[in-house]
Amino acid sequence: MTFPGINVHKFYTITELTREFGVSTRTLRFYEDEGLIHPDRRGRTRLFKASDRHLIKEILRGRRLGFTIAEIREIIEMYKGPPGELGQLELMMKRVAEKREQLDQKRRDIEETLAELDNVDEACLARLAELRVGT
Amino acid sequence: MTFPGINVHKFYTITELTREFGVSTRTLRFYEDEGLIHPDRRGRTRLFKASDRHLIKEILRGRRLGFTIAEIREIIEMYKGPPGELGQLELMMKRVAEKREQLDQKRRDIEETLAELDNVDEACLARLAELRVGT
DNA sequence: TTGTTCTCTTACGTAAAAGTCAATCAGCAC
DNA sequence: GTGCTGATTGACTTTTACGTAAGAGAACAA
Image (cartoon, rainbow over all chains, first blue to last red; front, top):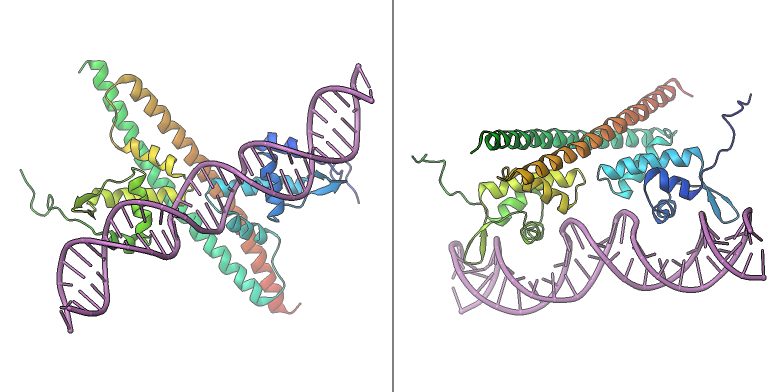
């Protein structure tokens, strides 16, 4: 059964994606070189599938969080479905647990930083109030 | 009024701090070069105060979150207390708001990534169950 | 004294993640 | 055809955040 409009091969050009995500063509080609995405080709021209577009989103998310390309690759590999063999399966679950710890650490770091920014903000407001009264 | 045990100048050597935080001496000297910390000197030897130690914590926190040194410097500058002038105050509050947005974005990124890791974990568990039953 | 440990400065090296530049090619407008 | 736009590859350059090595000085132990 096919779903019209769903299985339609809608491709994105490289510039469409650079505009959508605010990155350069160099960056997307770099991600391809790194094996993170695998756009199709028509001749030499890259044709990005919806799945490529989605992967780019994930890459940029990882980038914002300060993960290296190597770490992002690790995460992306996990999304590719669980392996068949038991040992590999256990290894993957260990890796997932590790990533989770890293993310939890980052989350704590964010909360702490936000708390300190709150202090800064309060100090600013206090100083503002002083100024209005006329120091 | 002085508080015995509080105003005591307890200094840290550079290696004490490298061991505590798991960074190299090069890294701490680099942070000084970048103007992020300002340890005292006895002769040429650096003496790190409690405030330096605390700043190092903040720097490493920023680093874990993927902030550049320049961005970390911006944040640290904010902690130095609100400026006296009105224009500067408003500028700082704008900067605080911007950092907060960045941190909120990172937080969303973390939640999304964690959610996907949950999926991976579930898939792994499902596969594990299959294996136990004997595929 | 010799050795070990810690520290310093200066300087060159490096890995990651692109930026930038040059030359080229395909498709379309006029 | 000519010109423009957007795509490609390949190579060189840059920035960030340190690593690493060289050479030297102070402090303490055996």
